[in-house]
Image 1: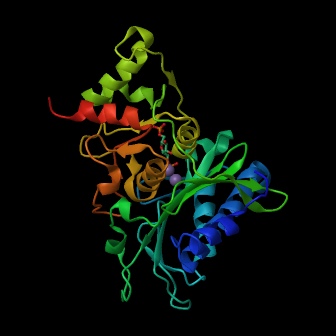
Image 2 (image 1 turned 120 degrees about the vertical axis):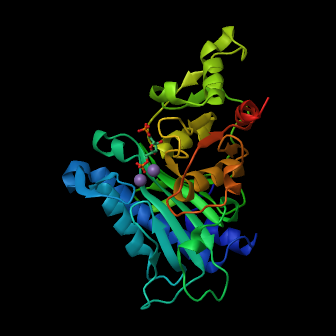
Image 3 (image 1 turned 90 degrees about the vertical axis):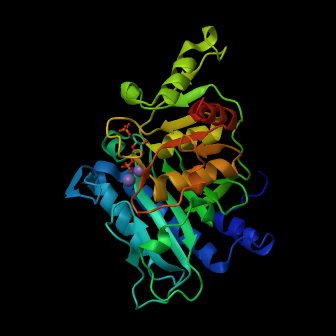
Length: 335
Ligand code: AHG
Ligand code: MN
Ligand code: MN
C-alpha cells in the first residue's frame, strides 16, 4: 500500500464519500479501537502486569471470570460511557444492560461486547480477542431497556473484533465490506492493511471441537465424517483441521484463508441451543463473514435472521466459506 491509511481516515471516507456512517458511529468505532489498544497493552504485559489468573468471581452465565475478562470489560465501559454516542451497553460479563449515566449526553447507539474471547487461552499465551456489535435505537426512545437489544443481527450497523495475536489486528465492517487494520505499536494507530477482505468460497479446512463428536446431531456428524474420509470419501479431497479454542482466532484464520467454524447444538444439554452467545459472539462474526462473501447459519436458518428473546441467549453456529456452509445446510434439510 503506497500511503498508509489509518482507522480515522478510513472512517472519515466511509462517512464523507459513502455516507454509510454518522459522526457518532465514527466516534464509537474509534473509542472501541482505543479501548482495544489498552486491552492489547494489558494482554502483552501478562504476568508482569499482574493480569493473569482468576478473578475469583463468576459471570451471569456461571462461568469463572479471569482477571482479564473483568479488566477488558472495565476498559470498554470506561472508554465508551462519556462520549455522547451511546444509549447503553451490554456485555458477556454483565448480568443486565448498562445504560449511559445521566451525567452524560445520550446517543442513539447500543454497544454489545464479548470483552475477552478465549478466556481459557489467556494464561497459556495463546491468541485471544475482543468482539463487538453495534445496534441503533429508534429516535426519541425515552428509556433504554433490554428489549431494545433484542434485534436480529441483520440490523447491526457495525461489527468487528480485535485479535491479540502475534500482531494486534482490528477487523471491521460498517456494512460495506470488511476492512482489516494492523496496530502500529510505535505510532499507536491502527493502519489499514486490507480494504475488502473476501473469504475463498471453496475450502478444505474445518474447525470444531472434536472431543464433542459423540454428542453431535447427525447432519454435523455426516459433514465431519465425510471431511475425515478425505480423498477416499465423497468429498474427493483431503481436509485439514484447526481448533484454537478462541472463536476470535479461529474466525480470523477463516476470514484470512478460508474454512468453516462450527460450534453446533449438541445433545449433552438438549435444551441449550448452543455454547456461543448470539448477540455478542455469533451475530458480529456472522455479519463479518457475510460481508466477506461467506455464510453463517445455525443449521437450518441464517444466524442474522434469528429474532433474539434474551440478552445472553446462546445459539448453534456454523460459519465460513459459502460452498461448505451451503452443503452443511443441505444436510439439515428434511429428506
Ligand atoms: P469466552 O472465552 O468468551 O467464554 O468464549 C469461549 C468460546 C469461544 O471463544 C471458543 O470458540 C469456545 O468457547 C471454545 O470452546 P471449547 O472449550 O469447547 O473448546
Ligand atoms: Mn467468547
Ligand atoms: Mn468472553
